[in-house]
Length: 130
Image (cartoon, rainbow, N blue to C red):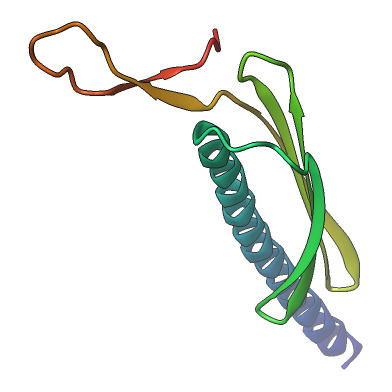
């Protein structure tokens, strides 16, 4: 009887461990998608010649019943080059989880050539980001 009880406990423990791993993988994937969207939004904002008014921001949102806290910082290195760092933290299964992503941004600028008899299509090139 003790062997049967130990076997059942082992099966339940394995099941719940794999369930925790699946929930963590889902949360991490959702966090990565959200962070990528934030970095893309920042890159588009900087590409539109917008002024960087708040290089460090924080916030909180709820997704699927779970609280997520985030921080985002942008640091300019001149000539259109930026370092972006986005952190997202949440609690799952009684544990603190955090995902940090750092990216280098080089916003694209649209230019057109003048002096031609036919209009040239606009092309996008990095603004002195080499």
